[in-house]
Amino acid sequence: MNLSESYTTIRQQTLDFCRYLQPEDFSIQVVKFASPAKWHLAHTTWFFETFILKDQVDNYTEFDKNFNFLFNSYYNNVGSRILQANRGNMSRPSTDEIYAYRAYVDAQMQAYIQTNPPKKIVDLIVLGLNHEQQHQELLITDVKYMLGHNPLFPVYNADYNLTADKNTSTESVQINAGVYKIGHQNKDFCYDNELGVHQVYIDNFEIQNYLVTNGDYITFMEAGGYTDFNLWLDEGWSWANKQETKAPMYWHQIDGEWHMYTLAGLQKVDKTAILSHVNYYEACAYAEWKGMRLPTEFEWEIAAQQLNWGQRWEWTNSAYLPYPNFVKENGAVGEYNGKFMSNKMVLRGASVATSPNHSRSTYRNFFHPSERWQFTGIRLAK
Image (tube, rainbow, N blue to C red; front, top):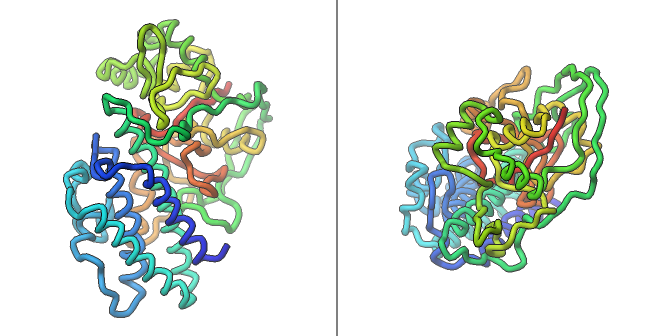
């Protein structure tokens, strides 16, 4: 698939997901970290206009000069922006205007791609497409958060559960001690935080080739997992008590039975399905209860070729830190990953919400330990 075809395909995937939304769904922001669908549609378009078209096309005319302020996310190099918590305050511009914005930029981008841009700019376009794929997953999880906190538990799409998948293995993998290479080692696309191939020493370890299921986690809950402070990190115990958390996100006990909200609506919890929507604190508490631990991101990467992965983003026991020789690029693109290397934990793998062709064994996702609105799960090691 050439660049023009990739651009069209990936941009269309965002629109395909939005086909099932109602007009009222596009502008709602339930919490600070979950952006409105309309904002995602515009921000991913802003990326191409700001970093490609405005710099590379002579006499380029912006669709709307206000959009740089409205749809910049966190790029200080590009200028001022609205507060993240205020993204849901924008009833204007309308959703129709945002769709027109996308169409305008897409036409300009396709025309520019036909000029055979230099490799440096092609690489930037590829980064923009991967950026769009990241936001496709965020769009799914943000919409789920919005609908999952609606008291009616509305159905997004009756055929779009996403949490019904099950393990296909019951085995564990043994990895011998040794020195292993870590990091992205080929010429395919990767993010800058994956670069800096380096060696690490790993002792003997065992890692499960399956993820924790809903039934496994219910057993933990029924054994008092949320009431035994001995199982929890101190910060996690404070979080659990402050939030009065007793179950994974989207779980509700109705008439003595656990139900969970899915994008296909409220359904009974399938005990054999893979657990989803737990945070790092919950993952650590469960591992402690089992007498095991979370793998480090390096152990995970070393074992990846022998693992079934891709169903859930998997919490690791590694803080999100730079690899040796990590170098941030100059300008706004340098703000993409490096400045978030604080108070985050690394997740590895991919999830059922990850866009096609947007996963690899070296991918380093990262979130704060308290966050669980992504499709996160647990794999244990010892």
